[in-house]
Length: 250
Image 1 (cartoon, rainbow, N blue to C red):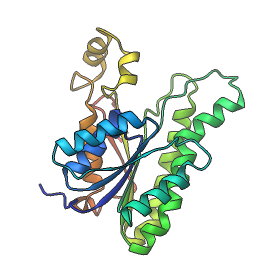
Image 2 (image 1 turned 135 degrees about the horizontal axis):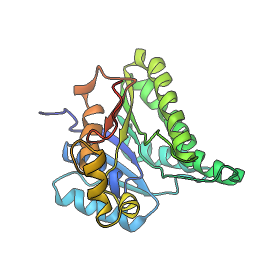
Image 3 (image 1 turned 120 degrees about the horizontal axis):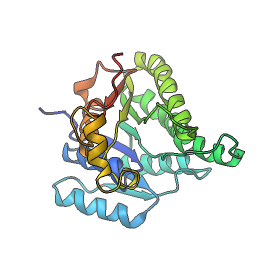
């Protein structure tokens, strides 16, 4: 199926590894010009090599600390300067932040900033670009929202989902879609640390309908579809990619 992404421009945060890297690769494979940003310059360079080797257009790279006070503004300015305009925004940067019930304010501030505030600020800074063009697709990566302990990332991602839903209502009349994708357990470096050795197999056989963890490409495929014109009538949703791990019906 042709997703009609050839010639589109896309900004992907947290693009140097894991799910973000797979998303950047998938978008480039469909013909999009990718603006990839993350902190690690060497990993970004290797991403560019992989995209070009796979036949995609050479991406634009920006090594930038997303959490820095001026991080979103720097990303937007560089993206518009290099791409001219942005058709697609993928808010992917983030990380789990479990903490004690008496965690200091600094821990909460860092976790909420990384997992919600900077995504909101980056999106808002790009809104004039989308509104002027009366088109665009925004996808934000959510996460596990079934906490076993206090986790600032889960609190932030819940806010990200609710914010995205409200934003979809306001941007829909302008031809702009806003969706979230909620990955399950995906085979990334972070997840491997949590489920070492045989723990992955044991957990998957007990808890996941498809009996294994997903690959970053499984999430990337869904994101790539949602930002494409093929998904023009999908907005305000949370799409779960978890192999059947979550058992709720609605």
